[in-house]
Image: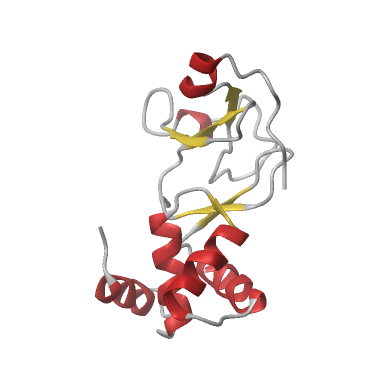
Length: 149
């Protein structure tokens, strides 16, 4: 698990100024995969104390732009953030509880980046979201649709 010194190095390597909010947000995203903004704000506030919503939004934007975090937004969900970047993994979302898990590409190095007809685009990312029910919801018989924020 990365520590503060690791996060500071990561920020410097991305040519970003090291600030306490940036370190705290990067740490929260690493600790809370697929977290929404409110969860990240809560984690940052428990670490730093008072920090504004806007400061966290600004840091998330900067980290996303630098490629240090990835923003995903499954249909019907708020934006979520993850630290797993640089690969072309996908996600599976539980229709009942809203849980999200990572899913590696099915086969090959990046088969989903080869479209049947790319219309002349230079494709560098594919976003695939699988939908179903997580093991806990299947076991409990939970059929209820997840509420969205």
